[in-house]
Length: 305
Image (cartoon, rainbow, N blue to C red):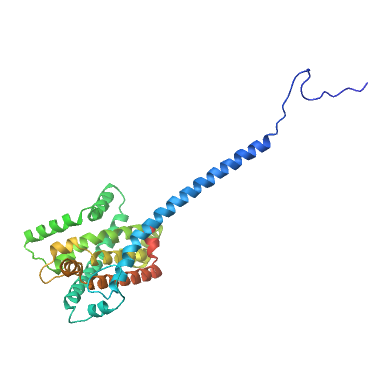
């Protein structure tokens, strides 16, 4: 007799088995989880986009307003402008009627260029020296050199004025330049140190093993590698010196009028529209320099690194 294969399932009468297919239930759970995840991603993107839009408006909005105001045909700073005209730019570039502004701008350019050159040289040497001596003292010196970024500029300007007066110096362009060097050198130090961290020490060891001097190694090996960082730091130092107010305010003398102080005085006295025109020229100049630096050395990459 052939054997009978037992059937799976209940063997006793009255037993009830509910056979449920788990696939639809799992599919429903998966779809619900995907929906919740998409909703969370959309909410996150919406919040980040909203914050980014607010930040963009805060950064770009004042620039657009001051540029539009500089083209007003009115007699005072007012937004929105009553009409558009370039009369204030014509007045700004008038060598007779805007002689004081030209003198202040020339002083600011001289100080900014001098501070940039000196700060770049000093900070580059300091960065190279600190990169070759890792340790506790090197970190302490690096923190000390970066401390001007932490100090309140008003407090530093007052301290510099009292210190130089105690030494017998009178306020002048030279003292302003010294104060600006202290303030802007950390920018060059930071970007140059970032470039130094990308330098392979094996290159320096190979150069030394071949009998090259320190100066030759620096000129032919180190300098080409850190040159983009130096250029980026020099650009930041120039811009920071050009529009520095606190240090210039305390160290400026009767014959060392600076452009930011002159603009502040014009705003306080008569709301001269030429202040907006000066701002427009500065914005255009800085944006042009930023494009050049981005093209030449990759300014954004240097700051990110």
